[in-house]
Length: 122
Image 1 (cartoon, rainbow, N blue to C red):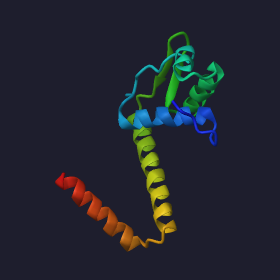
Image 2: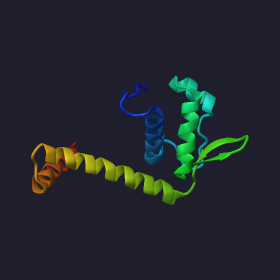
Image 3: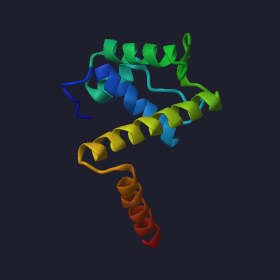
Image 4: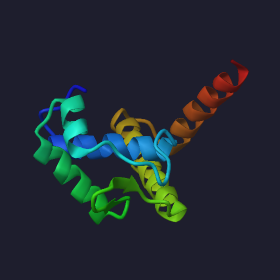
């Protein structure tokens, strides 16, 4: 994984895990790699992974069972909220960038409609 120097590494790893949970690549109840295992895989300090897991636990996305490991929550409402929150952030950023390019709401909707129609034909 290539890390962005402008954002703390633990946040980037959190975002990766959140994305994997939202997309279903990691399911509720799945065990996450151990801190040591994941730090080797990503070539980061184990403390970085520990902080990542602690923050995810604070947000209610994972839980730790002593001696067993860290697991993704099985609460589908939390996972659904994560997915909705991530979608909202993507849409907000998209709209901000489009408005920054000078598009108004009607033009943005028109462009999106054209793209969706094109995708459905393919």
